[in-house]
Image (tube, rainbow, N blue to C red):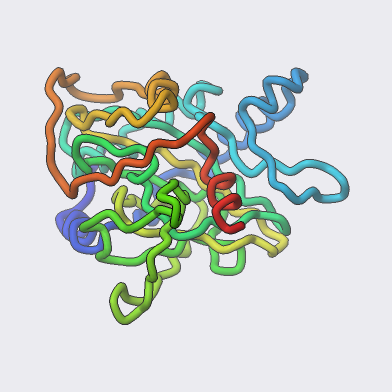
Length: 283
């Protein structure tokens, strides 16, 4: 399968992201739909509560899921797609031939009640020895500004931005000013179902709430170069690493150090999800 073109790679290096218009097909998305329905139809309430996170708002008195945790671990369809050459060939163009999957998630952004996500940089949640990671965000529905598509700040992936509250705790969101004069105007990245955003781990991004009648789902695989190793910031790192998988090429026994020096936050107690952290810090 083809990798990214030279122009696409240059765009990624310069802007911190690149869009691939047609990564998955309608048939692929149908398989994902079937997998989610199978998982949601599990009769075990404890398992459903363990693998799905739910919106704070209900619809018609019913809970609405906003995220499927670690889909790679939950169903073979997601494991197959993570290793699919249509995806990994393009990741190789950015990270080199030796790849691991750091984690996966399926954000469901349901209609009417889809929660917003504040500005943040992914790598603040899971600092590594270098910044050779990339998130592949695959649209499973048409993504528009109306249903809360991803917005990002192009070219602002050279350093860590402040994600701390006044007491020094981790806010899970950018807390320094992001005025347009210094950081530029946000860009809304709309896309058709099957398209994908390849996103640098330090590119600031957010998404608005979804009050529209259309859901906006995104399947996200976070890949890393095999010689990018996680920095220990607490027991949650060990738990996440249990869901990491070598995907392609050779394993590495040597950690490579490079990129901007990561800011280390040490969460207290059980780690919260992005949604929970941001909701708590807004208060």
